[in-house]
Image (tube, rainbow, N blue to C red):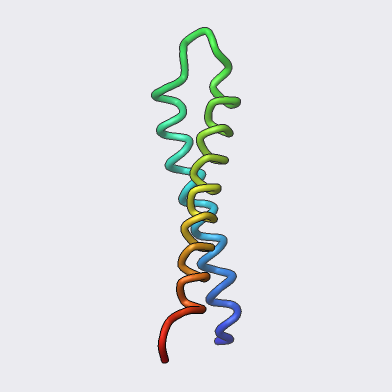
Length: 67
């Protein structure tokens, strides 16, 4: 298999898994009067944003690593 395919599969699995985790957390934290979909999407955006920030930090640090 092509290595770029593995990278794409990792990105897709990260998006799907954060969606599942955000769904579970968002449904438990949502108020009964609120529409839970909005809360779930907010949790999902926060998780993906956090993962993106961590990925960028690791990428920048890898640029300065000694080889």
